[in-house]
Amino acid sequence: MEVAIELSFFPLQEDYLAAIRNFIGRLRALPQLRVETTSLSTQIVGEYDLVMPLLTQELRAVLSGPARAVVIMKLLGPLQSVGGAGVAPAAPAN
Image (tube, rainbow, N blue to C red; front, top):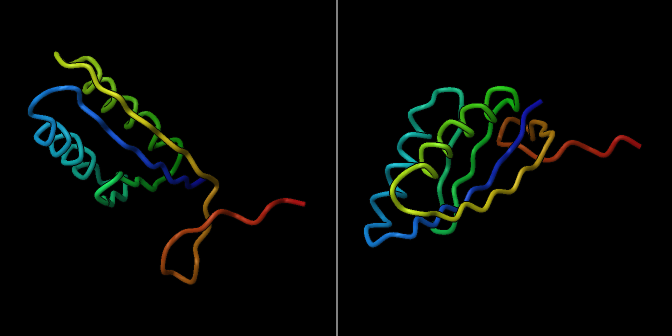
């Protein structure tokens, strides 16, 4: 099942931009994930069983660092293809 996750990461430290860029860079290095960023959040798309362990690993690294951080996460699924141009929520099973 493919899912989309929206993350907003707020490192509570002076050099917060470097921490954000490092986190996004590590996510982009994972070939199992499709990662897009905006000025407000990072969107991740991939198979649930692959995405969640990878995300757990990366969030553990962020949250076990020397500075505290806030992470806001939204999860949407399952997704379906939309004419090959992206993803959308699957139709409700009525």
